[in-house]
Structure formats: C-alpha cells, structure tokens
Length: 112
Picture 1: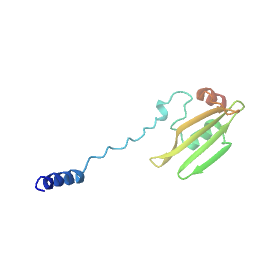
Picture 2: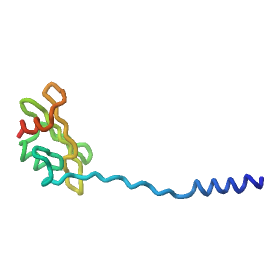
Picture 3: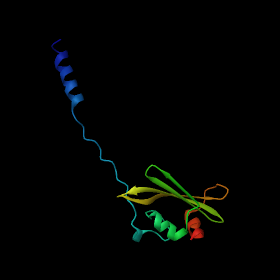
C-alpha cells in the first residue's frame, strides 16, 4: 500500500497539470494590391459585382455568403466569409456548364 499511494498521487497530479494549448492558426488574406491578375481571393461582394456584374445566384448561410456568376462557358462560385468584420472571398470554384472542373483563371477571364 505504501508503494501504491505515492505512485497514485503522482499520476493524479500529472493528470491535473495544465498543458499549453496550441494557438489556432489564423488564415491570412491576400491584399488586393498583391493579388495576381485575375485572382479574386480577398475581394468584397461589391468588388465582385464591379468585376462580373450582378450574380446569378446569391446564398446566405449564417455569416457566410456564396455568389455565383455564370458565363457562356463556365460557372464561378465565390465563397465569402467575414474577416475583420468585412465579407471577403476566401475560396473559389470554377466549373464548366456541364459540371466538370474548369481552369479558374480562364473562367474569371471569360466572365470579365
């Protein structure tokens, strides 16, 4: 019993010790001045409308927003999430009208 008690207390104290929690990585947004030509990540809804006109589809879900732009050859979905209180594009999907993956840069260029 004398051997078990100190070992048990050591295990209990070790289990109660606090461990440092890893800090969550905050996503970085590309600044509009450092974007590649044709890239739309980091744009606001107003900037998207300025580039492509009114969206064909607009879907709100919680605090996020999806804007869909359709052209003759492709469909572009822009997903916007709040960053520092401003909705900004964080992800983009491009596909053909038949639903196959499409080159984003080519789709963006065809919509502009």
